[in-house]
Amino acid sequence: MNGNGTFEKIINAFNRYYDISTENIAGPFCAEAVFKSHGEQYFLVKSAKLADIDSNDFVFFCDCSNCGSCDDEKMNDCNKCYDHNERVLHDDCAEPVSVCLSCAKLEEIAAAAWERGLSRVSPYYGHRNSDVTLVLFADRISSEALKKIKQLNYYKSYAFGLYGWSGFRLLAYEASTGRTVTNRRGADLKKLVGNL
Image 1 (tube, rainbow, N blue to C red):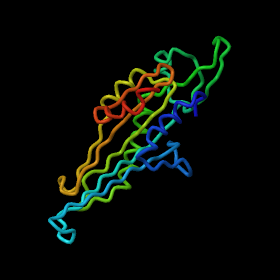
Image 2: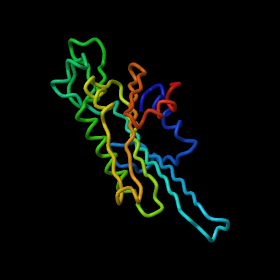
Image 3: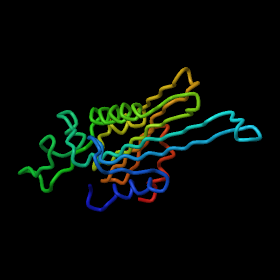
């Protein structure tokens, strides 16, 4: 994690309503959070139940500060010289460099979160929605990845929507600038990290 604790603050922002787990989490994620809500509708008495309503949110946290993801084309975008997969100090550089998150690495992490989130969905007549949320933290994010974050969208309906749906929300935090970027569905997540 980073030195000033920003990533820990982001995880703690979810602590009020989500069950957070940081132990035994498979990569590339360093933490997961789950929110489950169950509601029932009934007519006059509870034995005359009309509907079950289940809503879930599976959140995956990824700290990309130490993952090398820029390729040769992105070196100019990052404005630093470095070896892949490492933070290094070259002879002609004055300070250690931070690796930026590339578009390819972003797509790889997002696809992993989507697949892992969908594997936990149990659609049935009372299932309303199960959203998958990815929260990324990176020292630097390439300009192409910033554009891709805004466009990234996954959606799946179950039995033509009768058994609910799943949507994908994404929030990326760039530590070097303090910038927060989301996709269209993740716009409401900015409130959680707005005061960092």
